Length: 262
Image (cartoon, rainbow, N blue to C red):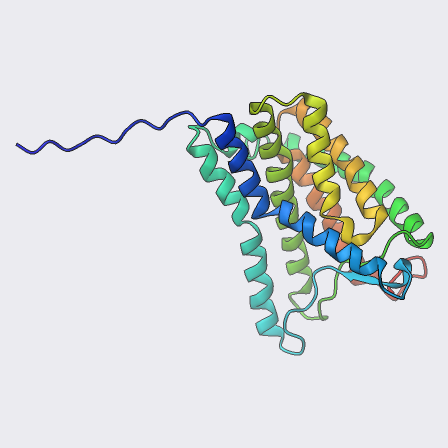
């Protein structure tokens, strides 16, 4: 009789392995974006134009003059941008938990929506004031949240992009990172600093205003996450902020005098 060998039990990851895992996830996602933003900002500083005269375009066209191909590319990049979240979900399952441990679920829909809307209203307005002030002072690039052509799919794609940004950032930089650094024995202030500085770093391509504003936002989000124990209301808040910024710019750019367009 042939004996089928049993699979060995999965060993509990050591602190070193958890650290390597964290660096790998960040290296494949927003940590790499932070390095890219630093390179981009260095390039902006060495341009002959002042920062306020340069433009950072978000959600740009990927196939100008070919709207159907452009749409396919937009959906491709939105889907690809969520793959680090899938990776985090897989790593948590190997830990015998799931994304629910981060509060990423639909179990409290109305409460999450209400909290998210309140946070978005508070942070969105102050963030706009900071951006306009830093751009006028020459410390920030002119941010163009939409460079998409005026076609039927522009608004839906901008909304999807806003939600992709929100899910990626809050699951990885808020829920997952804080969980891992806590397991590594970091103190709460150190964990907040790591999450907030990382959030600011990958917005540095926008300029000093983007860096500072997102560091402050990161601290607030960390404190709210610790209080609520859920990333979902903060995903909602982030998605609403980005949706208003992306869609608002697409509709208002060139029609109001107070909105810089480069």
